[in-house]
Image 1 (cartoon, rainbow, N blue to C red):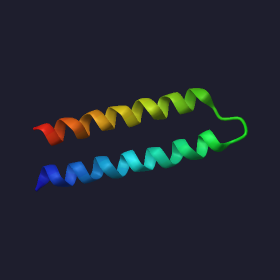
Image 2: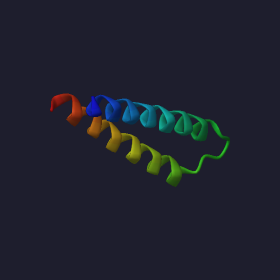
Image 3: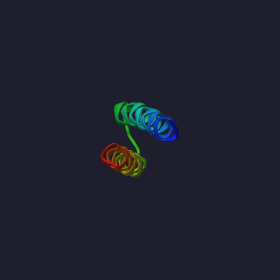
Image 4: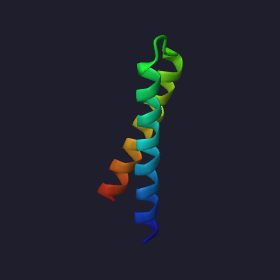
Length: 55
């Protein structure tokens, strides 16, 4: 049950970052460094989700 809770938390965080990323990219002058940082965080979470599914 603990892994399922962690998986759900990671999915929620991934979705939250996606929403922030979408908002930032829609701005007239997005902060590309911030966008890059968000994409890195999102990818890291995706990797963790993949590892937890495979395990």
